[in-house]
Length: 70
Image 1 (cartoon, one colour):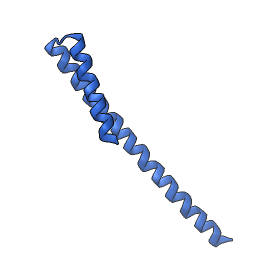
Image 2 (cartoon, helix red, strand yellow; image 1 turned 90 degrees about the vertical axis):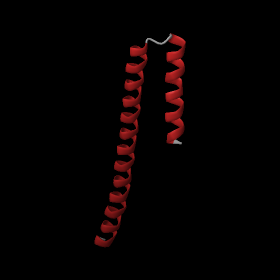
Image 3 (tube, helix red, strand yellow; image 1 turned 180 degrees about the vertical axis):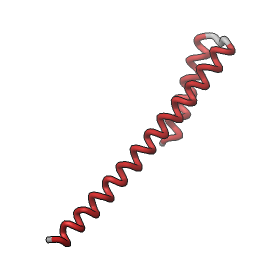
Image 4 (cartoon, helix red, strand yellow; image 1 turned 180 degrees about the horizontal axis):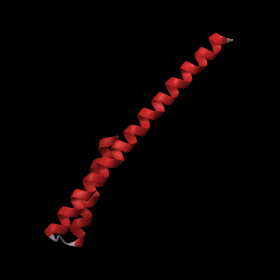
């Protein structure tokens, strides 16, 4: 019985460890995206670009960021 408990505890530790790693990667990815979009917003506001161009730039950043994750 104690051997079974050790095996179950080991498996649970592995699963929770993988979950923690995935959560950290997602958090890092979201933070990276927010940083990029903040920089883009600051830059386009400083340059006073037309609305259409601003949307194009934002869509480009979103597309490249999404493709990078794949």
